[in-house]
Structure formats: C-alpha cells, structure tokens
Amino acid sequence: MQIVKLELSSLDLYSPSTGELICNEETGYNEEAKSLMGYWIEEVFTEPFIKNEALNAAWKKLVTECDQAQEKADEEGTYPDEQFDLSTDRLVQFLGDYDAPTWVAFQIGLNDGGMVTDNGWFVLNLEKD
Image (cartoon, rainbow, N blue to C red; front, top):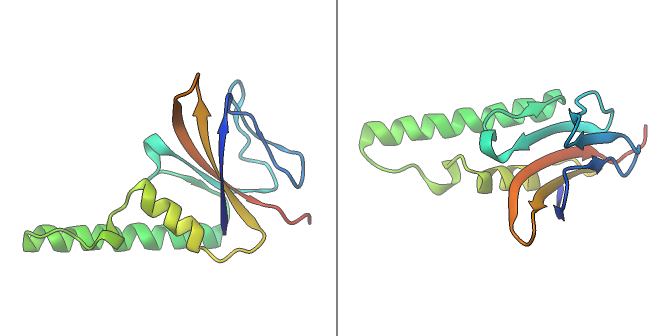
C-alpha cells in the first residue's frame, strides 16, 4: 500500500475516488464512508477503527506477535527485536507492507502555524466500485 504524507491546516479529508467526507474537525470521522477501510490516530494508535476484515486480521496478528515478543523479552530480561516494537513507525511499516494495490494510506499531520502535530493514518480504497 502506498503512503501519502499530507500536512493540512484542518482535519478535513475527502476521498479522492468517491468524494465522500472521511473526516472533519466539526463532525468527526465518517466511519460509514464506502472508501474508508480503517484509520489510526497517533494518541491511541493501538486502538484503531478498522472496517475491512482482512486488514483487521492482519493488524491483530501484528499486535499479538508484538505482545508475545514483549512478554518473552520480559521473562528473559531482554528487549524484543526492533521489528516487534509496536510504535507508530511500526504502524507505518505495516501499512506500507500491506498488499492492497488500490489502497492508499494518507498520513495526516495538522500544521498549526508551522508546527506539525496530530498524526492520523486513513486507509482508503481508491478503486471506484
């Protein structure tokens, strides 16, 4: 899946393929949008909204693997391998590695007067059905 980084002055995102509102600062997230497969918000990225079953299963598998690696490292008094560090960097890698050619993950950073904050990742299917 391709990842496109955007810096926006407001959190207004529309699907390029369907024109649907994906999110808006006033109304929140449009979880019913046909093109929206899922989204992650940085502050709570371990608790995403994922509508697509295959994407959800892949995410849950990654989280389980990371949890198991952390438990094993805790038992051994070591650190887990970097690939099992569940962080936003690992999320970006997960999205980039996910095989969905018509999907794009939009990484949104809010630019508030020169400072970029509040990353969100919105996975959209750009194929018109």
